[in-house]
Length: 387
Length: 228
Image 1 (spheres, chains in turn purple, cyan):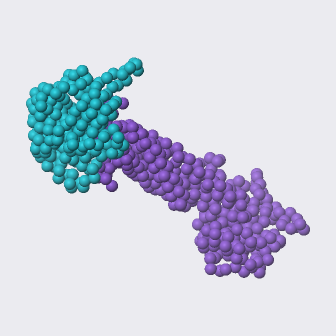
Image 2 (image 1 turned 180 degrees about the vertical axis):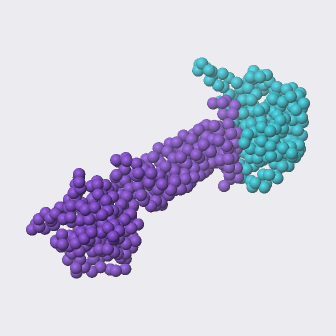
Image 3 (image 1 turned 90 degrees about the horizontal axis):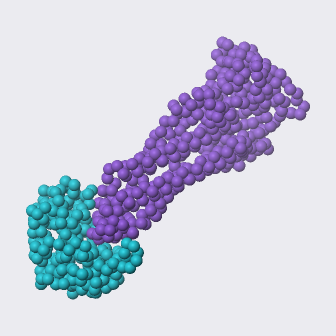
């Protein structure tokens, strides 16, 4: 690099006030973008994980008695029975999806996504037990140890509605109301007595490597007479919502980036306007227009990139520490929050962030480059004419 | 070959009213001799500074030719003109035009840095010039920390940094008190003659002008030789 360009750029960057202000503003644009990406991606992953671990598994096989599948990528295999019932409380009813599970269903992997408190053994009655979500328990105004009545919906044409009485054997909370509002667990063997059809018996498989590609690959390698499904297919609306929402969020962020680049361009313009006398002097001494533009570009772009990096760091630090704020929010009674998951592990979506920052970098470079075109009009004569 | 040669240079401006032209310079011929100093004198508003700006390639004549070592400045692109200004010309103006964010040393180094010299080469040459003009103890001072006379001395060093063929000086002592003006005047002539540079001086100070080898008077848009 030409020594003049290097010296000039350094002096401009170090010039107090103006560029520092520019850097702070760019950081203030970048940080919320990064936080938004971390928040939205982490929440989507958290919701997906709750669907996978509590509701469906990565892959479901109906009637798995003769199923064969590769064993190397399997985290757990759980036989379940699923059906529907209406639950009755003193003042309200609730439709629930019953899931018959064995004792070892609530393994370490699943307990990461739910708070579960069982009824102490001393308080257990001879009734079969049901584990309700705290949401359903609150709605029906029942607690652990109470008895609840269910009207079991038959899963075959020959079946009839069947009333049963169960004891609330535990309360769980996944933090995601859309799951909590209708999922309840009962004992596997008892569920077999309530639901008879082959379709009600589902084997849930959790995979170690749960990327979309691996899940699809595993599902296609299962050999069975029954039906094989992935969680994405079973919850197609949820999954496609995630994919669409993610794309929409990135698109919106990219639009914000484009708008922000106008700010960068306008800052570049202002900086050039302020520097007209200095640029004219440098041209008087023989600096070419290319040198002038190069040095202005380097100084403004360095400030832009530094601002972006500061914003990135602030965004990541804030994004990774959102949990306390979200927990406070989740305790508030805001109705709209029921569609959000407020308790999730923050994940930094490096790919999405890299995409947004790459576009920001390119668009800023382009906007600065374009706004520097008018340095050509600054000639040494500006020093004398003031034009 | 002359470092600077003006042939039939005419300069006119549009009237503020937009009707007709205001003629400032009319068919000026001027040759600057290598290693010699030339002064242009005349009353304020006669076009002395305009003549210097045209001779230095900063402004274009309405008609006529300006040659720098036989190269027609009017035929050159902006970047080539910049190159010639950097290598062959140095400028000193009444209001020094130093860069406020740069130290005295950096201000002097800039023309050589633009030319692509290494930082060490630039610093060596700048230190030598600043030392000659008694500014060794002001190297790291910003222009705001220098007196008017010191600023003008820094500007002279900057003008000479690239060993230019021609130094253009437009009222270089115009903003200084008498004592400082005399000091800067002496230093300008001393250093220009010791470095064997050609000088084009524009001033309304007859005594200052008379120290030059040749003196022209600009009157009624034309030059007349007063001393050779």
